[in-house]
Amino acid sequence: MKMLHRLLVAALWAAFFMSSASAQNAGTVTNHAFALGKGPGTTGYTSLLCGSAQLAVGQAAADPICRTITGDATLSAAGAVTLGTVNANVGSFGSATQCPAFTVNAKGLITAASATTCTPAIGSVTGLGTGVATFLATPSSANLRAALTDEVGTGAAYFVGGALGTPASGTATNLTGLPLTTGVTGTLPVGNGGTGQTSFTANCVLIGASPLGCVAGLGGNSGLPLVSNGTSAPNYQQIALAAISGFGTGVSTWLGTPSSANLRAALTDETGTGAAYFQGGDIGTPSAGVGTNLTALNATQLTSGTLPAARTNGHMNGTATNDNGAAGEVGEYVTAQQTTPQALTTNTPLTIVTVPLTAGDWDVSCTVVYQYAATTVLQNLVVSTSATTNTLGGLGTQNSYNFGSGSTIVPNGGFTASSPPVRFSLASSGSAFCVAQSAFTTSTATATAFGRARRAR
Image (cartoon, rainbow, N blue to C red):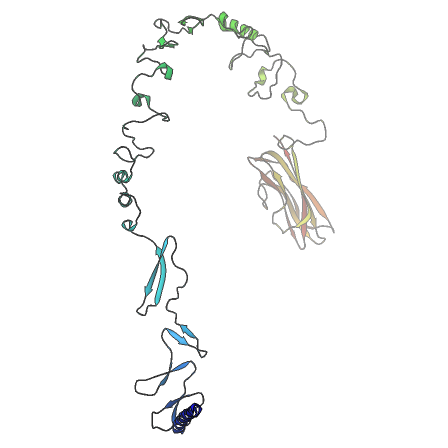
C-alpha cells in the first residue's frame, strides 16, 4: 500500500510540471539568451540576450535588462571582478620617523596615501619626567634645573668658555691657567712651589732658605757677580780671569790684553804673523792667496811680478792654435751659408743668407756669388751687409759694380762680390742679413752667399 501511495504522489507532481511547461513552451528563445516568463496564464517566453560580461538586472515592475557593471568594479566575460583604481600611489607608508596619512571617500575607499614627518606635540608625548616637557618647549637654564632631580646651584647652565660665577665649593685639582694675580689669595708656601713670603726688597736675589730670603749687601755692588762657595750664603764680588777654568791656552791672556799678537797666540789655525785685519784696513803683503773674487783691482799698482803669457804688456795675446773663441768670448766666430741659388728680380734687394748673432760687438761681412743665364744683359750688381732683411744697408755696408749700358755674360758666367766688414753692436740677440741686388734684362739671375761674423769685444 505504501508503494502504491508513493507512485500516486509522483504521478501527480509530474502531471503538474508537464502542464506548466506545455503552457509556456509556445514561444521561441534566442540562443544563449535568458527566457523570461510572462506570468501565470500567459503562453510563451520572451528572450533576454546580454552582451559579454553583462548581467541581467531585475526591475521593480518590468522585465530584467542587461547592464555592464561600472563604477568601482568591472566584470570580465570569465566572471572575474576587477576593482577600479582610486589611488595610484601604492606601496608601504610610515616608518620610525614617518607617519602615514590617508584620504577616505564616502564609499570607504582610500583615495590618497602619503607619509609625512611625525611631529607630535610635546604635550602629547608620555613617559617624560616632571618638568622635562616644559624644558623641551622652553629650554632655559631655570627649566633645566626644574627638570633635574640632582642639580646644585641656582644660576645659569655653564658651558666651557663661559663665566663660571662663584661656586659654593669645589676641588681645583685639575684646573689649569689660573691667573695668580686675580685667582689666588693667601701666601703660597715653599712646599707648594711658593716663596712663603708676602713681599721682598726691591731688586732682591732669592737664596735657598726656609722661608726664602734675600742676599745681603745688594746696595753698592752694581756690576758685580753673585758668587757662592757652596757652603755659605753667596755674596757679590769680582772674579779674576785666572780663577775661571775651561779656557783654551792663551784665551785668558787675550781676554786680559786683547791684542792681535795675543789673539794669534790663542788661535790654533791662524796664518801670518801681523795684525788682525778688518775690512777697510791695510791687508799688508799676503804670502799667498787666490784673487778670483777680487774686483776693482788697480793695474797701476801692480809694481812687481809678471803677468801670465795671455796678459803680457797689459794686452791679451792671441790664441796659439787653430781654434775659435768660445761663445761669448772675444774671437767667437759665427758663419751662415746659402748654397741653393735664389732667384733675383731686377733692381730688387733680396736677403740670400741670415747670420744669427747674440748680444755683443761683432764685425760682419758677406760674399755673394751671382749667376746669369747666357742671354742675360747685366747692368750692375750690389752686395750689402744689412741690419734689415731684403734691404740694402747704408754707406759703408756695400760694394757695387756697374757694367755701363749693359753687358751680355758668357754662358754659365758668374760674378763674385764681397761687402766690407760692418760693425753690429747688439744689446740683445739679433741677425745680420747678406743682401744681393742686380739690374739686368732679357733673362734670369740667381745668387748664393756666405756670411761670417767675428766677436770683436
